[in-house]
Every structure is written in C-alpha cells, then in structure tokens.
Image 1 (spheres, one colour):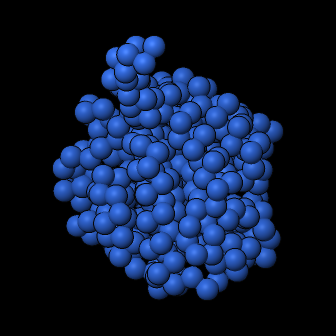
Image 2: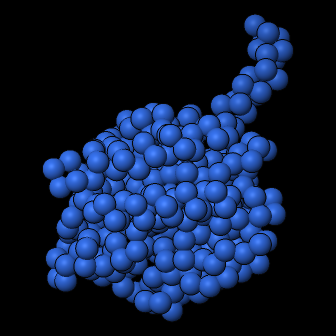
Length: 315
C-alpha cells in the first residue's frame, strides 16, 4: 500500500498544482493587453458595490453568464465599494477584511470560469462619510499597506485574471495627499507579477502597467476607460447635495444615450478598452439585471448591452 501511494505522489502533486492554477492569465505587453497570450480588449461593466452583502455578490455572479452572452468580458469591483455604500474592505491597519475578501474571491473565481477579467479596486475615497470617517486616520503608510495586502492576497491565491486600481479617480490623492506612484511601487515590490493600473489625473508612472479612466492615454501603455458615462452624468443629473443616494437611477435621455454609444464606439474602435458605469449598477442596492431601454418607465442598461452585442461581440 505504501509503495502504491509513493508511486502516485507525482500525479497527486500535479493534480494539486492544476487545481490552484489560474485558468486565465491577463497580461500587458507594450501598449496591448492580452488574455492567455492572445490580444484582449476589455469591454465591461462597473459593479463597484458588489461586495456590499453576500446577496449582492451572489446576484452579480448569477448575471455573469447573461453579461457574457452580450460580449462583456470585464467586471469592476472595489474593496471600498463606491459612492453611498458602507463597505470596509480593509481593517484600519490596511490588512484585508476577511468577509469582503471572501466575497471578492467568489467573484474572481466565477469570472475566471467564464474567461472574464476583474478590475480589483483598492481605495475609493468618494464612497461617502461612513467610509472616510472609518479610515480618517489613514496616511501613506496605510494606503501602501492596503496595496501590499491586496496584491499579496491575489498572488497567494494565484488570481491572474485581474488587474488593480490603487485609487479611484485619484480621490485619496486629492483628499489625503496619498501618492499613487508610491502605492504602485509598493504593490510591485510585493508581487511584481500582478498587473497594476494608474487612475489619477496625469500620465501613468513607469511602474504602472496601464492607464485607466482619469489616467492619460499614452503610446507606450494600454488604456481602458473604466468609468464610461455621458458628459456631466455624475453631476446634478445623478445626485443632489446632502442626499446619500442616487437620482435618475438607470434613466437616460436620448441625448445621453447617443453620446454614450458614440463614445463607446469611438474608444473601442481606437483599440482601447471601455467599461460602462451607471447609477443602475452602482445604486444601493445595485441592479445587476440588465433592466430596459433607459426610459423612466423602463430604466436600465439593456440598450447599451444590445449595442455591444450587435457591434463588438466576437469582434
């Protein structure tokens, strides 16, 4: 019996390696993104509040197949959620909160099974007073720690269908004086293989792998618009002063829809990535079903998904 077990050890070790290995690998070479070595263009949805509860995480996963059927291949999720949520993905020392890490793990694994990519967001300083008060004593040290813990966790779990946004729209950079470049370098020193993006107002630093949203497009690095909306969408149209919730949830005028579709087409045809952001997806609680045509009687993002299916799926 001992001899049999000994003879089976190499096969058992190989099986264990295969079980922990990622199915899909997202990478950057020059100014292009790749999935498993093949050119890859991110087309996706910003689902930043998906870690709010076990139910919201489960609902997002439930709709992944629906999204994939339209050609969606990328999802955005933040460890601090986004506006109006109360998501404390990190402890006050910058280490990961196990509850939220477990939810993120489920999403990453579910996306990996479908050859989808996850943008893993770290800081989101515009979430609202609950989040900013919870982390009110944070300095560069805690921000760097959050980055290190995040990429270390991704590396330890061999999650390779991911890339990381250190600071959404540079909000912590502006609000706390956090240096995003330093956060990215901290991540690269911890786990150099993890892909890290730059999302501040400016050109990405040399240590960043790509530029996203607020980051300026360059000829040397890929660019992904990770928060695509019509102009002035996040102003008076989507929120009112002193209210902790969105207005016009999932509602688009004809003009806003036309602008959204034109910008989507423009960036994708240029070879960049494009992810839709919407009050429909970020509202509390989030709406992960497609909804409808964006009218007041039938709000949602179905109209945008139809456009992606008809023009860019299997392109």
